[in-house]
Length: 74
Image (cartoon, rainbow, N blue to C red; front, top):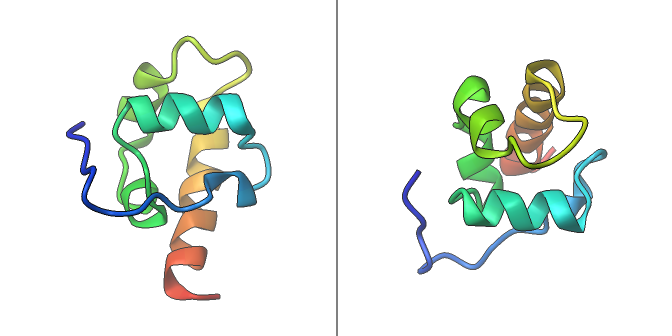
């Protein structure tokens, strides 16, 4: 996943289940904004976050849905 440094990162820790370590791992994987998370492929993101414990495709899908809501301003 390419990293877009030109966009200020969103606070991904606003999404329940994403703490500072997971957010840091997401940044390393190129996920810095709600929009990037909202459009992420769950399986690809799972592979990118393989060093973070307790992550599953279902959990990532939940994060993606919440990111879509945050991106929409809900």
